Image 1 (cartoon, rainbow, N blue to C red):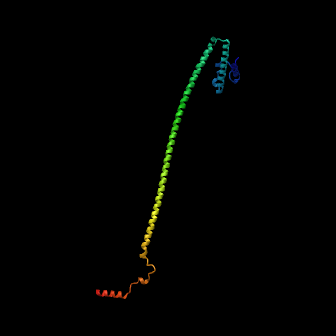
Image 2: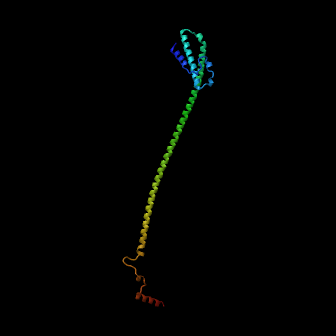
Image 3: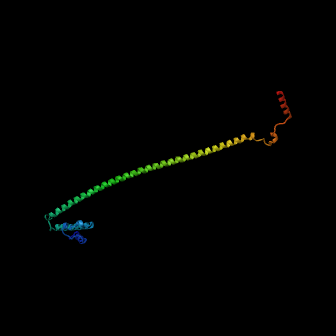
Length: 209
């Protein structure tokens, strides 16, 4: 007996005890709908182990000449059925692969679209920030210019006020103040009592009469 056959039998002997014993594969599938996913997987593995051991044993007998091709015709039909089942399974898997590829293509397309949109938004944001910086810079320059104009206006008003004060002081100086070194007295304010002037006034009055 070959090593492969021994390994198949060993795998069959070490299967879990709740798996139905070797026998008709169809009978072993009874109650499959009540099994858990783990039990279903273990049952299929046990059946596949039995089938694999059968194929290996049959090949050894064919090599030894104990079985000829005519005797294995029924099994050839089983192999064809397995192949057809495998083809159908491959088609199902191929359909899943195509669907997954479409989903992957759509996901990549959406990802590129979102990346492009994000780049556009980031670029627009940077432009707005740059415009705001330029606007702030212009406003700061205007503020500095206005402060300079305000300072010049204040200096001009101070100079103008100073000139007006000096003009007022000059206008009020010689006319409204007595000469320096001489003070007005009550005698200066009294009318003149010169005799000559009184005689002149009297003569003027007589001529008028």
